[in-house]
Every structure is written in structure tokens, then in C-alpha cells.
Amino acid sequence: MLDFFQNTALFAVLLFLNSSSSETENFEYCVYDDEVFQQNCHPDPNFTYSTDPEYLDSFPEIKIRVHLWGFNQDDGSSEDKLTEDKIHESLKLLNSAFKNMKVCFELDGFDLINDSELYWTNYYKFGNKIRSGDFTRDNALNIYIPYKFTNNNDKLRGGKMSNNRMTVNMLNYNTGILVHEVGHIFGLMHTHSGYTSQHCERVTRDENDPNYNAKCAGDRVTDTNAMPKLYGKFHKINENCEYIGDATDCEGTPYTLEKSDIQNFMAYTQHSCRAVFTTGQKIRAREYIANQKPLQEMIMK
Image (cartoon, rainbow, N blue to C red; front, side, top):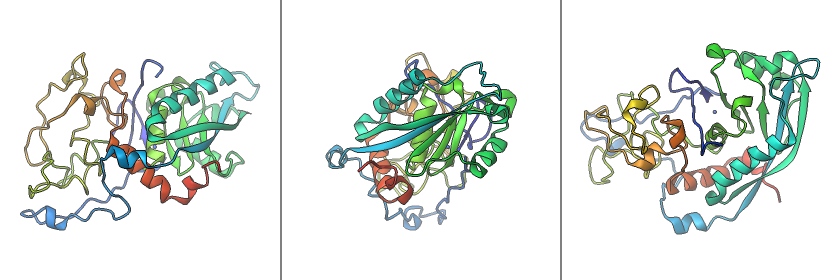
């Protein structure tokens, strides 16, 4: 997933606690009979869609290896160099955000690369050079931290590059963009996914309602409400992180957003509000990790 201050739903942006993915999103949406949505909704059998805290607590704690990469100019200089202290800040943030998911991040190592092109370049050129060079540690989550990307007037912040590679720029080594992108690595989608689709996620959370489709539309998590992408509409969020807008889903039903929806790590909302994952997101992430070999290989035995 790519992340911009301005652009389409391919891009993700957030900050976290004042200190506080790149592949294109091609989500498959359910094809519905317009009269009976639920009958043609086929949830993914790899997920339970549970929101049970006791089930979440049944997962064992896992430790993920992390390898960080910093980039300087050819002569070794940098306007904002990645240091060991900054690396520890990054890991501290991740461990705080994922603690209740029972996921811990441990440093496998870090490298500083002197390469002016990787230091500040186009995101796609950066990704191509990373993939073609010796810049990946197997069995670890590789986090690349260049100075900046030139895309969108230097406003691109980072993205998920593959199952074990992601990047954020140096402005965000210790912000919630790290949490958001690792969320994508763990299989989580934007909470507003497909909100403009003909078969968008419906507002209802009544499973007996024929419009109910939370298990196969949107982010496929049933305890995150259906919601629009709110980037560029921050005036619809008040200082208490409460939604005060009047947007509707694709059926014309007004969204019913709670404060926790505005605070969600995987949402596009006020940066200062981002602070939480739901129980359903945590469970989906743990189930995703359990079924993905590249992620299993990152786990320390």
C-alpha cells in the first residue's frame, strides 16, 4: 500500500500518540444479487471473523525479527540520519501498539547504506533498486527508512512493498505510519476499503439484515464500522476525535461512526486521533500470520 497526504485509497497516512502498505490494492469484492446481498456473501474460510477477547488471548506470544535499513548520501551525509536511538524508538512504538495482539518485535540488526539515489528518490525507483540489490534479510521484517520520496512533492510517507518488506521516510520512523504499514504486513486493510464501490460495506451490523456484508466487504472485520475515507475531510472530525459529518454508504444509509473508528490505526482520519486496533482486527491479524509462510519465517523460535 502506498501512503500520500493526497491521493486515492491506495495510499495510507497516519500519526500516533505524538511520537507516535508497495503493492496496489486489488481487493475482490463480493458480487451480489441487488435484492439479497447476504446470500452471495462468501466469507474467507481462513478467518473466523471472531471478536471474542478470550479467543484472542488464546494465541501465544510471538516475536518478530526486524531488520532496519537507513540510507545516507554517497558521502555518508544525511539531513536526518538513522541512529541506534531512533531505531529503538521505532521498536518501542511497534511493541506498544501491538502488545495486546501478543506480538513482540526484536531487532535482528540494521544497516546504513551510502547511496544518494536510495536516500531521496521516486518510490517506485526505490522499490526496484531494493528488489534488485542485496538489501533484504531473509526471515525478518525488513523496514527501509530513506530520507524522503520525491512522489507527490515529497509527501509520500511509505508503503508495504511485499510480505516482508515495508518502508517509511525519516519523518515517520517513530510515528503511527509504522504501525499502519505493519498492519498491512499482517493482512489488515483500510477500514474504508471499497467505500465507493457499488457493493460497498453496509452500515448495518445486524446479521439478519439482508444488507449485512461486513464479512466480505470493507476491511472484512465485523467490529470496525463501515466508514468513508476521511482524508481531506478532517473538518468532519472534532477535537475529541468524534465524527460530526453526514456521509452515507452506497445505499444512502448514514454512517454510524464511533470514536474508536476515528481512532483506528487503519483509518484515514485525523493523525492525532490514531491509537487503536479492534479485537476483531487483532484476531484477523493473528490468523493471517498463522496462515502465511513468509510471516511464519519471521517468528523467532
